[in-house]
Amino acid sequence: MNLEQLLAYSNHNGASDLHLVHNNPPQMRIDGSLVPIDMKPLRGKDIEALLFPHTTAEQREEYFENMELDLALDFKKVGRFRVNVYRAMGESAIAFRTIPTVVPSLDELKSPDIFKEVIKREKGLILVTGATGSGKSTTISAMINEINANYHKHIMTIEDPLEFVHKSKKSLISHRSVGDDTKSFQNALKFVLRQDPDTILIGEMRDRETIGAGLTVAETGHLVFGTLHTNSAPSSINRIIDVFEPSKQNQIRMQLSSTLIAVISQVLVPKIGGGRKAMFEILINNAAVANLIREAKNHQIYSQMQINQSETGMKTQTQEMIKAIKEGSIRIDDALKYSNSREELKRILGK
Image 1 (cartoon, rainbow, N blue to C red):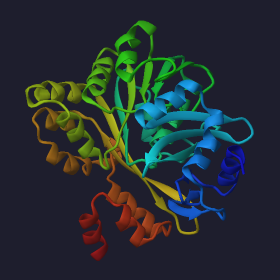
Image 2: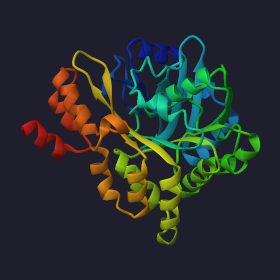
Image 3: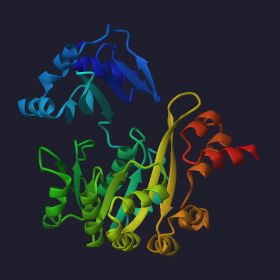
């Protein structure tokens, strides 16, 4: 099979990812587990021969210089894919991630009602966090889609690489890809205010410069979406603060306490009968939470999330796991496997 046929086969089987690694047959990730394709093992040169016809000379030069390459591929008859090329034992390997061609809506994803409320804010920071492959991009894309369909805004996305492609509806969409349209996240954020945006998506808040710029843009009257690789809402607060040197952490706490709107932490858990279920932990910044952030009492935020949830819209992942277990949609062992509070979940299940 050529690359397009291989990706089509992967999509046909409902795979979220496709992996090509030297001396191994291609493997698909289906419902979180790897499944090998019945093919002979590929060599590194075979893998390069599959990919390189779909890349530019500049991309190949970057790969051989840095031994890493991020890009997006779009096959009209198959779909769009996020691609990472890397070296393993001196040979080329590739990880493909399927990007749905149809942008989902919040209703189609059966997202919590609070998502439609937080996106109505004119300014502030909304963080969507989770491990790689937890559905962060899908959730943010659905929220962007909701704004696009209902409000007259200028939405700018800064991504590496570009994933979901939105068509302008009521809003105007400007997609920017790092490497093709801007040199870096920091560079794009340096000039973004001159481009008259209302809503800004920062594809990944990787370092202190990007995080600091994102906080400043949110502070100046813009709605900012960002992602982090953290596994719970409270740990996301710690991650942002800890990335800065101690002398600046008080200032960051003040900024974060005033700009943060919400932290949505998620994980995809295998469902009984097939597929995966998104489990959300939701932190909404209110006066009590903001005060805890300012006073460096982050360890008390989790307890605050459990108070008056019907009014605040907050929820913990453990509560969502227990609910899904009682509904019969996930297994107990899978809940424990994916839990960010395993001991708490075991204690409640024991009762």
